[in-house]
Image (cartoon, rainbow, N blue to C red; front, side, top):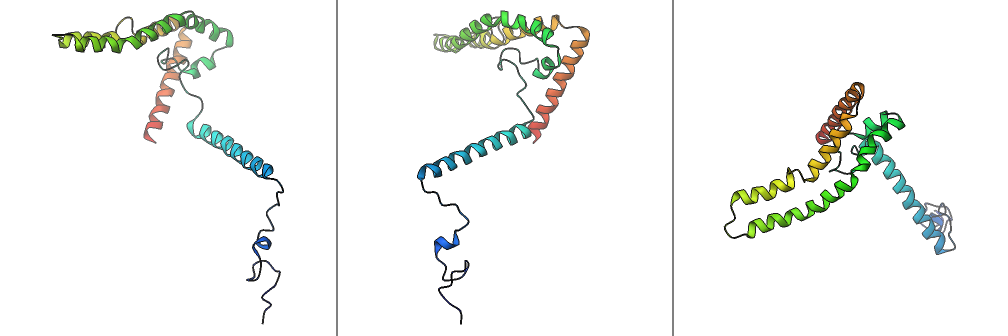
Length: 180
């Protein structure tokens, strides 16, 4: 016969406290809260590290989707610091123009609404309002394109080849990501 009140863990007579002897005894709820917060912070850091690893690095564009998205960051990172600052000088000089274009582009949907509400509005009126937003000389894309042309005009032939290679590599990475 076996002793039912045995103190050996794993037997039928063991109490719940005896089964959990491997857990530390926390005398304060503050320690419990601190341990939980610490565990959450560790999981956050691990998640960010794993996400960064699988995503493949930093985003590819420099200053937002609509500014100079045609020039990859990788290309600029390859340039010496002085040359990079020289090329980015024209971008910084024209940022106020881009901000003005962004503000005007926010008003463009109102032009479309006006064209739609106008009595006797034609398809040409609607198309003109849409074109002013998308492809007009005052569009945000046109402003960003002008800056890209300015930067490209300052590149040496070797830098142009590096830029072309960086653009192709970025396109290949985007294509691989879209397949996955």
